[in-house]
Image (cartoon, rainbow, N blue to C red):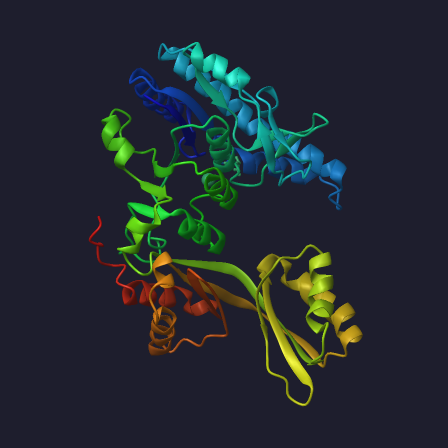
Length: 424
Ligand code: ASP
Ligand code: MG
C-alpha cells in the first residue's frame, strides 16, 4: 500500500456529476488501502472566465500591483474545486479535507502569474493522512513570503501535483486528463498516432518544451529533479475498473533509459505553430554582434528560440532567430528602431507564418543518420527547411506553417511510428 497523488484536470472536474466520478475513483483507491492526496484543477473554463472578468477591468499597464490581483482572482477557481471534491468524498462516506495553497502551505516566489514553488510543508498533510483522511490540495496556487497568493502559470496544477508528490515522497503521481496518455504525435493531425506505454523523462521534457501540451513543462522538470514516478492517464475510463488495470494504463514517464534503448529511434514528433522568424540583414561580422542584436531582445523579456548566423560576405552577415508569434511585432519594432541604427544593419525582415517541427528520441544518441532521414523525408514532400537546430535527443526544423501537417504526417510515417513497436 502506498502514498498516491492523483491530479485531475479541468475537464475531469467539469461538472458536479464528473466530480462525483472523481470522488468514486479516489474512494476506490483509498479503500484499496492507499493513502490518497488529490490535486484538482479549476472546473473547465473557470480560469478563463475569471481572467476574462479581470480583463474587463484591467489597467493598460500590468503593474506588479495589478498582477497580484490577477493571481488572487485566478486562484479562486481551484478553491471551489477542492471544496466540492471534499464534499463529494464525504458523501461517499470517506473522511476528506481540502486545503488552499496558503493553508498547506505551498511556498512560492513572488513572480505573480508564473510563480515557482520553493518548498511545501508536509506536517499538516501527513497528520491528516495518518488519521485516515483523503487530503485535497488546490492546484495552480501557492503563497509568497509576504502572504500574497500566487499562481504557477496556465496548466500549473500539473506542477502542483508533482511538487506535492515530491515533497511527500509519494510512490506515484497519476495525472488524470482528457487524453489517455502521451502520443507519438497529436492524433488530431495524424490519426495513426499511437499512445506510448512509456516515455523517458528526457524525451517528455523535450516533447513538453517543443509544443506537446499534455503536461506543463515545469511539472516534467520537477519530476526529473526529484525522480517522481509519473503517469498520464484518462479520467474517462469507468471509475470502477480494476485498480491494477488502471495502474497499468496511460503513459508512464520512466527514468530507466536502458529499457528504452531497445525501442524506436524516434519516439515522437512535436510541433509548434506559435512561432515567427526574424532576420537582421547586413550586420558587420565582428565580435559582440550577437550580443548587440539579442541583448536588447532579451532585456525586453522576449524569449528567443532557434538562432542562425550566416557566413559573412564582405565582412557583413545575416542573423536570424525565432520568437513566439505573440512577440513578433514587438520584436520587429525593437530591432528596426533600436538595433538596426546601432549596428548599421541594412534591413530587418520577418515572417510570422512559420512553424517548428521536431523529432524526439533518446535513441538518436546511438544512431547516426536520423537527422538525414528527416531532411530526406521533407525534401521528398517538397518542403523547404528554413532553419535547423539539434540537441542530443532532438532535431527541429523551421518550415512554412502551411506545410506543418504534411511534414508531421510524413515524418510520423518515415520513422515507423504508425506501427506498434515491439515493446508494447
Ligand atoms: N486552472 C489553471 C488553468 O486553467 C491551472 C490548471 O488547470 O492546471 O490554467
Ligand atoms: Mg492541463
